[in-house]
Length: 279
Length: 306
Image (cartoon, rainbow over all chains, first blue to last red; front, side):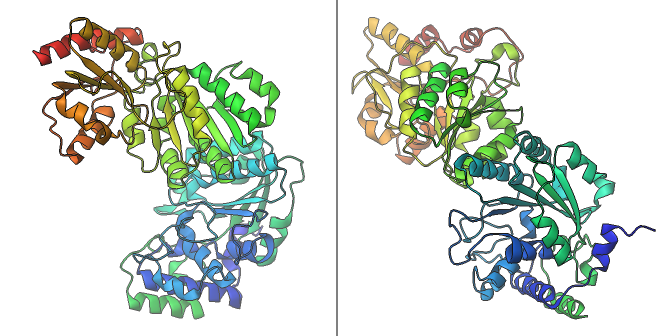
């Protein structure tokens, strides 16, 4: 029987660093007493590989012109992004504990004006892809070589504007644009296929004119290799469908709608999450 | 006015590579001269206003100045959230060129008539809303806009409007006053209703009733405090706008009056009704029907004044 990417993602072990990044997520979650935990845990390896191996970026000079642009279009997954950014040195890790507090730079969705290094404020779904198309076009018009990466959730693909953006990205042959789908196949209300089925997602993007790559979204090498690949056909935008597990790494949050977003999280719940992460 | 706007964008683009024109399937031949001369600064995208607002926001974020033209309702209604979040939240120098303000597209029905666009756009923090009266004001506004890093929403009239603002060759956000510093009647208006109100002024003055018209091309801040004496001494003040009564010029006037502790007792208005029209015909038919003509305004002011 063929082993699916979803199975690979489920079985994929986490190394020490990925576990550590998850402890940072829990630090922020504990500080704020709320957050989209499971949505963040599914994208940590994707963001980790981007910031460690792929993006041309500089935490000490976040706005230098030749940087690659990265937009977390599924802004509710920001706990994962904040953990990686803290680890990369964009801000002190102690800041994580201020998550969602009144004067924190770390809100429930990422904001350009409060946190250096955030390219574009997101939160309402279906915006980041179009903005990324505009940025990729800007690079072309300026004849600059930086790339644009947009990370979206699969639930976000329900938004019609996403497919408008896909049509236009292909029409303009924006091959400096990489879309990454955090394909955990869950959304707030349950299994995505039971809400609005995206299957077959590869064929959908291929028919829209994208070069499509499928990866195990928790496997660092698989992510690295595919993020580095350039489209085989010239002039095509690229999409990486990253099979992931919502809530990956903490059993009680895996494939859990309860932990999609939770408020009034107790100390005891945090302790239990930490224990589960260690085992 | 639209033609002047598009021609001005072309001229601005010629001298500034940051200036881009973007349309959404606006029809063959639109700005053909610019498309041929400056193909890298001309984009005719598909029918996808939500995407286009995000797209031009990405371009603006990277230093470009996009001028996006389409029918007003497709900007203000369909892409409201993109205007709010992608453009206004990020304070990007995007210029939304909104075609068919008010009842211009009356023959096409209520999906196309931008009767509440001021209200929608003025409710967005940081978005600056303009309603020029003629091609001269449109040109001066667009030229001045290049120096401003903030986002603009600009309502167009139908086109072919009589030029009445030629005394003003630099756009400075201030109201345009036509008349004396003291008069019996003050008519406040915006956009292409200015010409109608100037005709009303002529009718009233031929009866010996002094009248001043104030045109507000910039709707976010009316600067009423600059005209306190005029407002305080007027017998009647009327607001004329091709817009629903809520959230447009009339509301802005009331806000500023209240903030300045001025009495609103003598302020009235003629607006479009707060309802969708299920009639067609021409823009003129609708303006006639709702009393937005020089004669109807004249009669109303005479009634109020007597």
